[in-house]
Every structure is written in structure tokens, then in C-alpha cells.
Image (cartoon, rainbow over all chains, first blue to last red; front, side, top):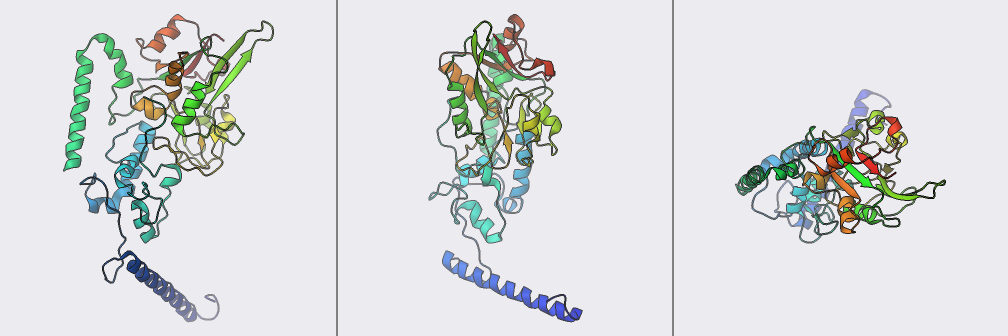
Length: 142
Length: 244
């Protein structure tokens, strides 16, 4: 439909489609925020599961923007060089942020990682390989 | 603030450990390379991890090392073609003399690993301390390394997995093999198979630093004859066998 006739019509059609998508998003978002019991506002907010402990390893604002960079950096240092500091390790994240209900950071939509990743529609691949639950006592003795 | 305090306390604890290591008898120093590495410290090229397996002590029919490996690394323990096996028990028999030997076979952690040579993405790599690993973030599952390995040591994960061990991430579509239990080695422990062999009372496996002349493994290989599997290939494996 975009390709037929004049440029003007193609643009109109695209704009209409974008508006429709936007409307659908806003409608879905509004419904979702009511379900989560978020405060009434123009922008729905994800309900984030509280973590154990008092503070994160970095300021919260920094982690919200940069946790993926921090994890990527730590991942290569751990994998390639064997540096196993707890400060920025994924295992460390999971130990503090696993939810009380599922014991996991990514099992249910309300769990820590999935709450934001679902909200932002960013696919999370970590837990296809990595454990999303903290270690339990099993395996060989030291 | 608490995070910083905790980090500082941990740093002080490592410092205390290091001081204790230095001030004790010189004999303790040989443990330092194996047990003294702090988590912040990268694996050192001065270390070459190795494993010596005495086939005379390895009991026929015993699979303590295999089950310990499976439990430690979260493997299913299945032996189908599509199941991951990091370590296998092999029974040998000399048909002329009738002498039988039993040994565990796993990634030999070669100094010149063919799996690293053929990897098209750089996923297969050798760490500074000689442990050959797969970076599964980069592995595309092409299985060239499985074909290149003369020891049949590597496996592809064919199916989706769940409940992986926190220390051992594993996932479908990537190749994996024995890691010398790198997460345990980095904590200053021995691989799970070595521990299990000792617990089973056989003590057929000795793990240690081949580069440290004072280590148990280095002294044993200097004193007793040992061979490398397929030594003719010139790969200089870190795993050596006695009695075959």
C-alpha cells in the first residue's frame, strides 16, 4: 500500500499506521499500570521487586542506565582472565535481587529483571544459560 | 556505603591471608600459587595447570570422577550421542598380555589446542594458566572444535536446559568441555573429579601447577615415567597418564 501512487499517500499511510501502533501501546500501558496498581500518571512505571540488602553495588541511577555495560565488562574479565570479583558479577546480582515468591530474578513477570525488561520490551538472554536463582548447597564439597 | 565497606573488609581479609602465607614456613609457599589468588587477580601465565592420572590406582568400574563432574557442572549424566559428556571412563586391554587398565578421559588442556586453532569466532580459547575454555557468549555452535579435537572431549548442547549451576552457565547451541572446574580452581580448590577420586579412596588423580617445581604433580612427573595421550601430535597436553 505504501508503494502505490504518489509519495504523499505513502507517507499518510505510514503516519496512520504509526499512530495506530502508538495508540495500542498507550492503551496497553494504561491497562497494565492499573493492574500493577502504579500511581495514576501519564507514564506507566514498572513495579520493581525490592532487593535484599541496603544498597546496590553502584548508585541506582547509574545501574538503571549502565548495568548492561557493567555486566558485559565483568563477563569478559571473568571468562577470559578469571577475575571473579563479586562487585559486578551476574551471580552477585542474582543473589540480592531474586524475588521472595519465585526465588528467581526472571521466572515470573514480576521478578526483578523481567519487570523492567518486560516494560521496556528488551529481550533478556542471560538466563538461557546463566542460573536465575542463587546457589543452593549442592554439588561436590570443596 | 555498605558496599564499599564490605569491599574494604574483603580486601583486608585477602591481605591478612597473604601475610599469613608469607610468614608461615617456606613449605606453605608452594600452596600460594594454587590457593593464594585473590578474586581481583587475573589468571597468571606463570602457572600451568595440569592433571596426573595414575592408571594403576584408577579402579575398573569406578565412576566417582564422572558422577562428581556431572553433579558439579549440572550435566544430565546421559550417555547418548546428544548428551554432553565432559569426562568418560575408558577401559584398555593389551590383547597380547591381557593387562587391563582403566582411566578417565577428558579435555587434555593442550598447550597447542587444535580446538582453538580452528575456532572461527575466537570462542575457543586458552586461558593464561593453560585451561582451555569456550566463551559461550561468542560460540556459534559450528562444532569445528569437536571435529578438530583428537580426544573427542567436546560436546554440543543439543537441547534447552534449565536449572544450570550458578558457577557453570550452559546453554543450547554452544560447545562445552571439561573446564578443570575453573570456578573451583579460581577459589583455590581442586577439580570435582580429583576430589571425588580422593574421597573414593583411590587418589589416582593429582592436580596442580606443572610450572611450580615444588608442587606435588611436578615432582611426580619428574620422578616417575608418565605419558601424554597421543603425544605424537605434539600438542603438549596438560593431562598426563601413568602406567599405560
